[in-house]
Length: 313
Image (cartoon, rainbow, N blue to C red; front, side, top):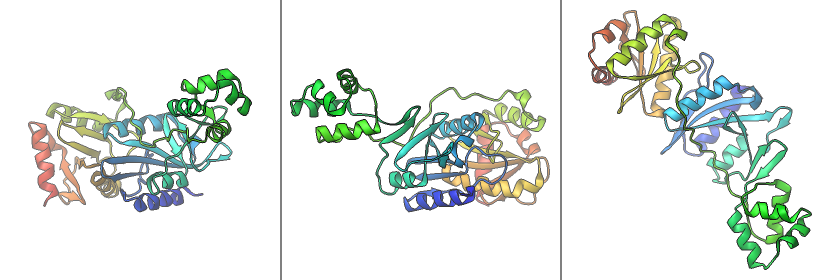
């Protein structure tokens, strides 16, 4: 399946589930394809026909971005290596959950969470050890009796009751013997908490280093981005600015429009900084600010006020 079709199918599912989505990111190399919000749930989604196409740098930036916005990163695909992704199963690449479109629909549209996850050696189920123990004692079955029914060791049954996960076929037979559901549902809504690495200034182009220096002096915390339609995130305690820098004027309008779409979904402001005199104060919801104007400001409050003022013009 072509990636654009996969994006379309994913977007359709999300709309059916009541999400508002951004436009597809189709400029620069990108760590995500769309953002989506429903109430307090915010997603950053990457689509790849084969989920093994995700590289570590892209995954790291996707997780950083999701953490920054208290969002969940999610990978949507069709295959892993040479095998189709199974419906109802969760895979993972670099710590990011990966599912097919059907599983996404089950989770968000039908509110049926997956029960199976893929790991080295096959497909597994996380067992509810308390439900497992309660069912066994209620039926007055010994560890040995269940082990004999399943064709596994008594020690394995003890391990399951202590929290060890089971292969799918064992879990199915275990539920049949105990006549009770024991599988723990898997959430696709994950949070990654880790120290956000900042890019070293010397690794950035001169114009980006200059903008970062100006924004930091104004009181912003700045996170450079390398695989997003914006060049950095600029944040105060109250406000976040998706910040683009004009390096290619021919792409500015397209990027600014895309940044506007994303800003609406993630509840942030959108700002584009340029050395040239802008033809208009904003493009969609993205406010255009000259570098000289930035240099004339005294603090972050003044810039946020300027952005809000121009966004209403």
